[in-house]
Image (cartoon, rainbow, N blue to C red):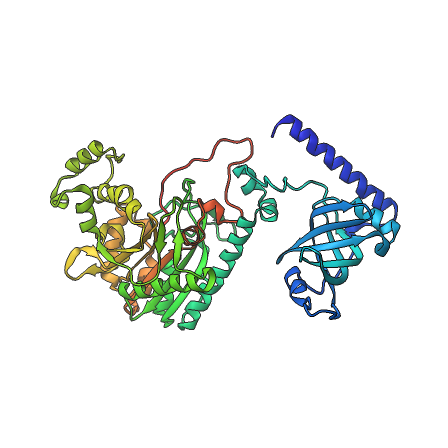
Amino acid sequence: MKETSKQATNDLFAVRKAKLDELRAAGQDPFRAEFAPTHTSAEALAAHRPEEDAEQPEVAVAGRLMVMRVMGKSIFAKLRDRKGLIQIYVKKDTLGEDAFKAFKKLDLGDILGVRGDLFVTKTGEITVRVVSYVLVSKSLRPLPEKWHGLSDSEQIYRQRYLDLLVNEESRTRFLQRSQMIARIRNFLQERDFVEVETPVLQSVAGGAAARPFTTHHNALNAPFVLRIALELYLKRMLVGGFDRVFEIGKNFRNEGLSRRHNPEFTMLEVYQAYSDYRGMMVLIREMIQDLCTSVLGTTTISRPGGETIELGGDWPEKRYHDLIREATGDSEWFTKSKEEKLAWCEKEGIEVNPALEDFEVTNDVFEKRVEPSLIQPTFVTHLPKELCPLAKLSPDNPDTIEVFELCINGQEIAPAYSEQNDPLVQREMFAAQAGEDVQKIDEDFLLSLEHGMPPAGGMGVGIDRLLILLTGAESIRDVILFPQLRSQGGAAAQETPEAQS
């Protein structure tokens, strides 16, 4: 912020603080005032009776003062509450000289309650004719300029409360987030899924390959991690006889920040006994289409530039190997050596770490060349077995697994698979993934599998990524109320493409 802007802000703070001191000196403390609204702005507008000569109801509404126009002995103003804006009309003859004079001293951002009857102005706007008002909170700092709002992205994220006050788009997006999460819960509960809660503090970071946040429990004198995935405890629920379970919860990964990644993010994981990855296909398609129709009112999503995404109808399936062969133009790709694949990547300008394993090189090609091209909803199936040690091997090709990744708008929205329930195979898969780091193997989870887990389909849905898609947001920071940021004045936050699956 420029020095002149800081000085102007400080001057305004001093002016508003002086008004507060004046009120208190007169025996009025707005922070101790009480007011009980009878209507929200929307309820008040709906209460108006359009019939000619109808007696209009008296309402009491409370909100933040957003607009004020003084017109001699009368004032038009607008209050904002959780349901929107409502116009109020203040007249000197009605309030009395002292109360009217005090009202003129109010500042934009002040929170007040008003009481009065409804009428319609000459321009056709339903308005509250104020007979009394109460200042219930004094705003000591000014709101952002009405027409410019918050344009600085750093300020938007650091002072989200101001963003919500002045940016209708942000307010709508976070209301939709709440509505969608509520609808997801209802959708699953209508299908007999039980919502459960599993530990955030875990002794072993399992269910995904990611760097965890570590901590220490003093009483137990033991290390713990914040969970990186919900999966392994939810599968224990299947062992325990809960055949349909889900959890919506926070995961934490000590990795970089990017447009699609935040260290703390929200996941939905769903597990259904006696199902498989194809059952999960039906579930995710129906769930997303339900969200579209119930919250957005359409299955057509607009993208920047005018292109649209159609989420209605059936969604096609494409095999991972076929997509790679198509993207590379090489039908023999999977018979090539790692060195040959790296040489192709270099020629194509795809940056790949040469220390990666062979399958990881191929997956880099998928993430950088294939995935961004999958704009319409597509189930990518039969991934290499090395990518997920928790899935069943494909019966027709033991080098692949019964998995899909749902890709929409060039990013993965939901991975799902037929869950591996053979404890002996699961141990082998864990051991292959862990290598010499055997302490990362969750022995307690393997013990649970040895008691018998029914065949099941499981799925993870990145709630934040799904909301980016459905609300048209540009970044994960736009769908998380208070995203992680660098400390003010500190070093810039590292941005990396590390994935949160």
